[in-house]
Length: 307
Length: 273
Ligand SMILES: Cc1cc2nc3c(=O)[nH]c(=O)nc-3n(C[C@H](O)[C@H](O)[C@H](O)COP(=O)(O)OP(=O)(O)OC[C@H]3O[C@@H](n4cnc5c(N)ncnc54)[C@H](O)[C@@H]3O)c2cc1C
Ligand SMILES: Cc1cc2nc3c(=O)[nH]c(=O)nc-3n(C[C@H](O)[C@H](O)[C@H](O)COP(=O)(O)O)c2cc1C
Image 1: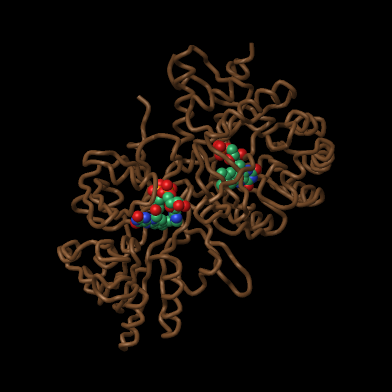
Image 2: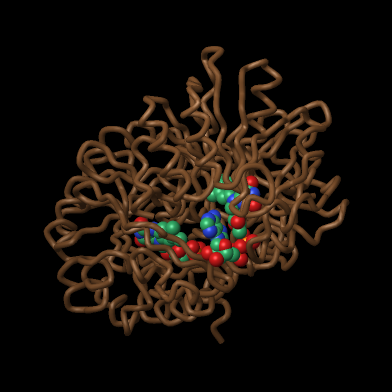
């Protein structure tokens, strides 16, 4: 079989992707910053930075610290707000030549509903990813994502006003991620993204103070991969909507772990910081794997690790 | 055959280390074979580098371009050993491979006039200002480099500078070399003697930068500072390296990696970092 016969195309909750690799929210700006290294069209889709109704200044520095095989971030959803997005970013999105999803975050149920209603009429945006799992903001974020009843209410409200593909992004900090996933599914989510970062902290022993300005931050990178693979394994068994897996994917084998655990697509965040061409390398690596093992489509591998 | 990093034009390079010298206590100068970076580098820009492929340490590290020679296809880095990656770099031998992204960031403003400049370097802050000195001297622009260090052997010796035709004014905290004091003290001294450059450029610790900006303000002189922060992506995408600036009445965060690392010092909120 020829390398390029190996197919990576996928229809994800109604969005057709050239490959199952998605640029993870908050790690890829609005899709333009990495164009010197990689054609945005090398991605299956790009999820833009968490967007809120009003502009947010973000958290005080330091916002980052490296940890063993990972990093903590506490950006605090710094973003210019939905109006700026519509006016200044939206007209440029077609240049990216791949589907774009907007990650939305609110402090109240009403804010999520309003954001979804606004984006419902934006043709340049293929879908939304509802972030109920950000660990770095005082209101909203993870405080919504932990309570299945609240998640069901929230996603129900969003579903009423949003017709296009609706993805819900979950956190392992939610306690029982499976119950939260089931609640989002019942409320009408078309797909689930998991995992968001895991809340953590680092203390500077010389200064005897927390390193991050926000005290705590979200852990990402290879350090969280086993937690993420476990979450995908459990959630994909419990729901019958597609699961997008993420957390520490650095190379093709890591992406394969998620796919074998049950993910229909994978998102890549932190790895872009280390290798801006990572998406291209992983799609080549996936093709090579399919070729070497005699599969013609990666679909055959989804959930294949399950006995 | 699958394409690899090397085939991506210009901006991710596998570079060979050509030469490495210890130039002061804990300081090393590295010369890298890096044709594209050498061709495009501007003073104040940096490279984001990685030596090895382990997941710990995970992130790349930023280093200013200390000199670029497009004929020899070389860039130089000047590195102070501070932790994991810098000690690994110090232990490399010629022939070693370093992976770099860059040149990245917004460097020092290219002078639009023939104005004179005072360059104020605190310690390893010398790295980018040395490149600026060389470029300005090559363009015959009046340039004076002021350099501060803790003690004499914390700074490179005279031959390091003289062979490039650079003649810095030096101060050390303990007075073991040059004047007794700091780089900011040297600036104050030069300003007091009536020198009025068109611009001041500075790189060094935050406390020094805050004082340099104030000294400049008192004389009505524009000060450009090269700032540091923790960087993850280094291309402007992750917003991790934000540095606070005051605009009107509110705080606004700008990206050290992309909007900087060089900024006009006037609005930087040094007291908040
Ligand atoms: C734009 C830019 C240009 C730079 N140019 C140079 C240069 O030319 N030469 C040079 O020697 N250094 C330069 N630095 C600083 C350099 O990036 C850090 O010293 C380096 O990342 C430390 O890595 P490490 O693995 O050796 O240390 P680590 O093991 O990561 O850390 C050791 C200690 O240093 C602290 N630290 C690490 N990174 C930073 C940072 N970015 N800012 C402040 N403290 C930090 C840590 O908190 C820790 O206490 C620059 C930084 C920036 C942002
Ligand atoms: C710097 C940074 C910013 C992030 N911002 C967001 C965000 O705005 N919204 C969101 O849903 N997830 C955000 N995330 C989480 C990522 O999208 C992803 O879920 C997580 O980092 C795990 O994947 P990774 O290990 O490949 O990075 C952010 C992660 C990082 C590292």
